[in-house]
Image (cartoon, helix red, strand yellow):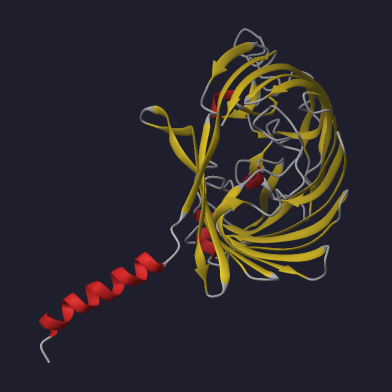
Length: 426
């Protein structure tokens, strides 16, 4: 049989199938955002200060002046966002949809560049939902603080978008279970490369980040719990790995104009979630440089958020984070120093004049021990326009790292942040 004669028939057949299928529907959404902010102190931050986490410790220059006690102010529009919701024909008996979302907060040779935020496809059967692609990490959850700051309550609230395969199963009319396997991309764990932008540590461990959770949702209440298990291999030519277990519980009550929300997260090594802590070396070989094992820093973070109103809306966020030390004692290396990776660790010997270096001989290495935040806000919302004003007071307590990962001889630094945001929503 001459295949050349059959080719036109195949073209006609596939064209007929394509025409018979439902066309994909597109819904464009997003906003144009302009943010002005003032900080009374230098902060650990991302995206040039749009995502602010916590104030930096005291760091003295040669003249004995704290280099971080410097105010700053800036106006940026990089938080502007655009997205497309997709709805297509049924696939395998399931409703099909997807999302592509991006903003201008990526870094590149042109400074700020267009970057991917979310990109996933989703299939929905009667009681089962399958999601494949990049979206919010399940630890971020469905209950999130209402803030004007792009940090969405971080570092008290998990903050991460990752590529994943997620299955959600409806168990009853209100209860559902979720399981997910994820890999890191833009939000990655810290490690020996001294950067949080390298996702090789989870990649080298082969096994994905694993999550399971339960959520019960009624007319007024949303209640949920979840647990996350992650294994990293910090050095590719070293067999030493670190496995971390984290868990969270959250609640939300919504009735009319009132919203009450809260979440508590117990975290081991959640630097990929922009949260405090990480992991450190717990054992070296006899050469004092080859790592034999790591240990997790443990952290407990909580926040509560109250919001009231629609056209004129007021809100208050309270947050607290507490370092609980390490699972095992930290080990000193050949330079008589602890090696730790994550948020809140500092190694400079001239960081703080108030710490008595005679108490310990660890070159005055410091750790963020406690963190507090009070952030009231008010917004005015009409049609496609939103104007908001937020004040953020964040206090950080730093001290010298001990063998058990705790802090000694602590002192406090604070940041006063004022954020004004103007947004056109479409």
